[in-house]
Length: 125
Image (cartoon, rainbow, N blue to C red; front, top):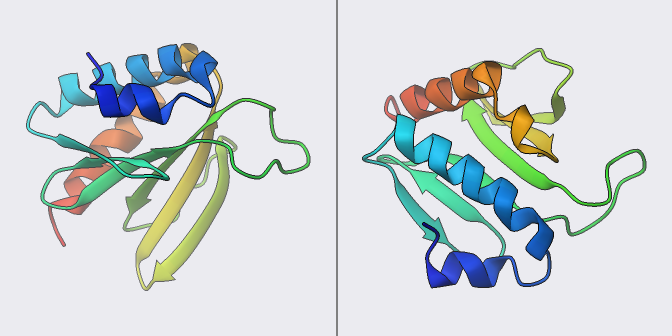
């Protein structure tokens, strides 16, 4: 169940709350020791370090949906998937990937594999 701070995070985009609740539930079921931190611009899922983040749409980009959650995660490699909207390498061998989520059906086995890999990667830093 989301906290009050998590609910407040979605005040401007209440329609995205059910998607976030599904995402949160899947991540915490797979990683029950993970913690959730809410800031002004993102919700972070942490092990020892952050392994996944969720943010709301701030700037619309051409071709992107009007409403979406931006799900970001770091891996030690660049992920080659058409589902990845952007991938950047802010540090050598540390790739941050951004995936646009619009419906709970996107929280599938492939997505859970990325979450698991990101969690493992966060434990090796």
